[in-house]
Image 1: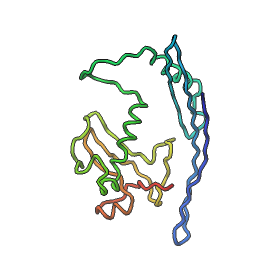
Image 2 (image 1 turned 90 degrees about the vertical axis):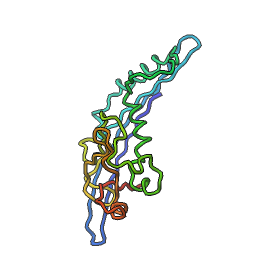
Image 3 (image 1 turned 120 degrees about the vertical axis):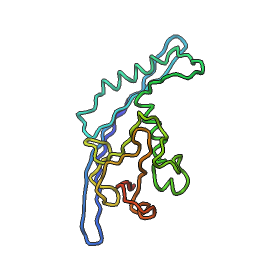
Length: 188
């Protein structure tokens, strides 16, 4: 199974004086699911790509990765419990970051929904981890010159060599916590 999606959207913000800012963006994505079989055993593999530029999508690469992911799961064995170095694939890291991302929200800190309450300027992660929230990343999916409140986008260092350095603030939570907005308001 494979799928292709495309979307185009425009964000417009108008203030009470009639001043307006706009941003247009496209998003293209492809994904593929493959099945590998050997005798009575069958496994599924998956891969996906997204880009703001159609030309950057590589359907043959997604199909190949999907098939390879299915094949390598055939006859997989559960290893013994152990402590050892591990290499995580990009998709796994993305899922972990997705799980952790809400913990950087100032709103979630305020509502006690975050795993990072009281951890500002503490070493929580490996010193090999630096994590940015980059609203200005060229070609970045959902990047924009401004956030949902019209605040100019920024690059925010959230984790610097394992140390939690910042949280994500919209204007409300920035005022509440006596700090500046990190241009992190998202709407809709």
